[in-house]
Length: 118
Image (cartoon, rainbow, N blue to C red; front, side, top):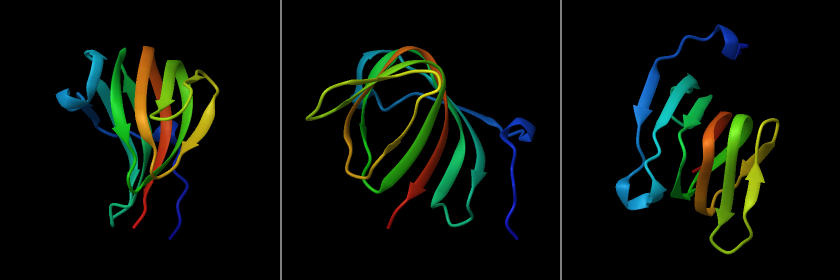
């Protein structure tokens, strides 16, 4: 049965992690994630993600992501493109095939929805 899940009422466990050291370009970013929803088949996730400052490479192979920035500033740079600065209130998607870097300029928090495509 379909559900409505309010993030404000959710009590997910906090996950702490760091990016793979081989992907870190500068700084020492630390991630905090609160997965609010996760489909049983592992193909859809939503929640809140936070990162401390630092820069790291990303590669979206089969992932499609919707992001809504809650706080902070992030510069997202595609491998073959100009940087895009995002901050509070900005919402965007990242399509499968994106390769580039996230440069977290100040501690940032976002809502996310990730769909794994097959």
